[in-house]
Image (cartoon, rainbow, N blue to C red; front, side):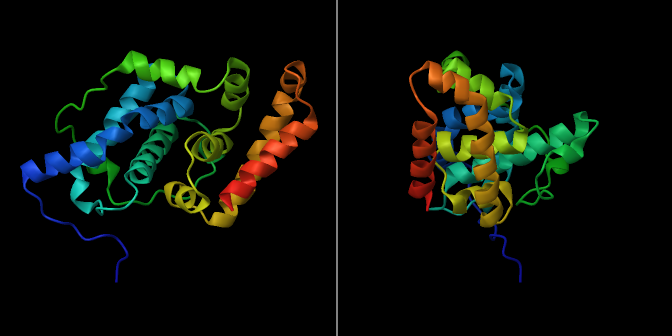
Length: 214
């Protein structure tokens, strides 16, 4: 028997009402995630629009009461990988499992526009979320390590939620996050010292974040 959720038939009015109420509040963090993955404002807007088009088409498969943010982030992540694989000459460098989900991206057609409103505000939010030095170090990480930092330390997902978004085991999430934080710590060591923080402070912050997620 399939573990995929069953499709629930909805009237257009009910679908539109629930879609607006449950998924549109995630717009800003979804854009921030897209911007941190693509590092380009236009690509981020395109990725968010594509994500909402797919989410609207397959909204009947979304289970009420479950994590709407995690569902949208998974769709966006899968869309990003699809696009990356099409453009990259070395797609194997993206360390993700083969794409799974509740939809077939190749079948998706444009069914209307879901505008990216307040674009300037979201772009500024993404820039202001972390300082320039930290952002530069984060952006320099390989995309799979950058992603776990974003999901855990910026967006606050639990290990279980991250495993579902990324389609990987929780053990892999923990290992990847540990390595990502070590990479980021190394890159930020000089910057931290210039701001008056020693290595002990960075280690303490990392251990505290890990403890909060256990």
